[in-house]
Length: 239
Image (tube, rainbow, N blue to C red; front, side, top):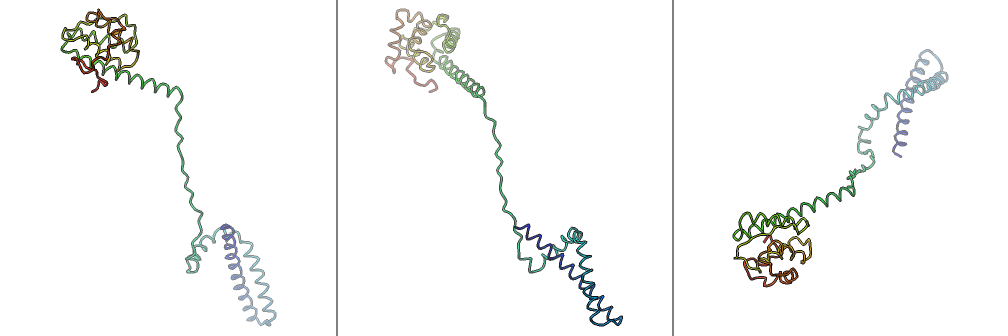
């Protein structure tokens, strides 16, 4: 719609120019005819003929006027008060939101991420358990025995064959109840096996103090008298 109006506006200006120029030339021709002594009728006929000639000439160069002069004339006309208050309609701006499509991770990416997270969690739990064990036995076993205990715990955390565990010698200050509590705390921290395996782990690690106790007996009494003994039941090894 706007384009059609602009085209009509251009044509009006061109025809006005052609008409004005033709009238001026025809009027000059008529005036010259009268000065030469021709009668009024002949002068009027000259006027009409020159208008026709002028219109034909100007129409032939219409394209040139349109392409070369129209932009300047349109700018000049639009500065007049009549047109200055008319704002040219412009199509509304359409905001285009370009959403960058994120690359979708593959199944292998998710799988590797989960494996990495599990490995980190396993490492974190192992560090907590080793710190707890060293702090607990620092006054009740030699450095060498504490190192053996840590190796046994690493063995247990990695679900390796428990028959390869080395026994640990502790001071007599620790009672059977203390060792059972320690075993339950380690089992509860990792939760990687049932309590029967945890009891078997204790039976092998503390072979001398627990030599008279069967695995099933150890299992049944892991959490006895939670608040008694030097080593107490501890739900969270970080606390």
